[in-house]
Length: 496
Ligand code: AMP
Ligand code: ZN
Image (cartoon, rainbow, N blue to C red; front, side):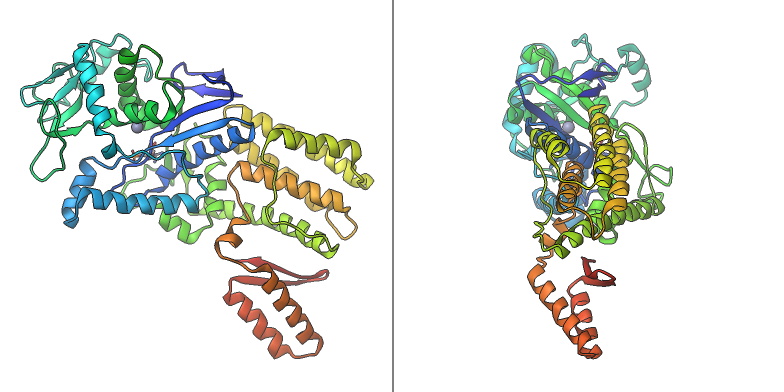
């Protein structure tokens, strides 16, 4: 697999520090409000990366933090008259609900900044001791960017250019800062703010310190991948490198992955422009699978434009996929084959075995053999595209092609083996992208046996010309979120 590394600005072959183990850290949100759909982009992109790596057989240690202390949290908590901790905990819970709604797998660890203050103090002490940090008169600790010769290597910025750019940006309260690019590692408390004791003053850490303490702690040392949105390249990630590398004398992370921004109708999303959407608001209007399909329809390093029209088009795409899968399942059920919902293969070895086995032993109709050959070409392309710096946009296209071929070949005379195999393939390729169609029924506790029983009763009622009863059953099902469709082959149902 090749990954575009922001550090070298090249696509590089992906090689892990330990064989088949990935240490991955993704900068998480600052929890002062509901997360917005821009925050959802790195979540969905890097969750997909993780899913694909798991499928390839890697053991992925996926760490993603919540920033639970910062100015925005303190200000909002003060406005609401609650503590920062209460506010942060509330929005961590809300964020987790949104993540579930977008099929984001739970992180191996979700560290919180406020629980890691001791580690941050130790790191800052180390930097002061080694001469990379200095203490101002008021107890503020600054990182001395002139001491780290490689400062600017991630953002490809030159320190002199940076300093001239920053000349006018002197922040009040940072009077003792020697150089414009120097940044705060520890700052004194202000009235009404939470604080911790430290060797320098009562106060709290600067933002850039938390990740470079939590990432190596929970990932187990130097990282394979550090990821986040492109706005974090400078100064956040640049400053993380500057703290870690002089202290530990090893590279902080081998690969840096950054997603480009999500814009709304080609404009930056902002509250003042009135084009701001929370994930919650979007998930009330669209299925999480639709949001995923949409987010992954553009390569993660390209600007992604959000609009309701584009979401509607992703919704239509998801419906095409769902119809295809429902059709396969329905045809199987008509052949008295039990279908287990959403069954898929978990790793590439089993998947390859299925393909080879099918090619050599399958009892397919001649037309199905031909179709399967085409499907295999699209499968190869699907994996080639994911191997090329996670090109999910082109991988999605291959899924649509497979759906098209399957649709042409599913009918009453299809072989059970063709139906079973294509169902397994589609479910697996979709699962890697985090499209989990069966999840809806699981979360809604749909009782399939009950539904089938009610459909049978309705069919009986119709036979007996008791249309009032038949309608009543249809309505009851609709109230349960189940829509019926009468087709020539029988009654189909779907969750709505
Ligand atoms: P924040 O809470 O601002 O620290 O953001 C959490 C994550 O969301 C970071 O990785 C940001 O880079 C990312 N992010 C924030 N806004 C956007 C956006 N509009 N598009 C894409 N990523 C974003
Ligand atoms: Zn971070």
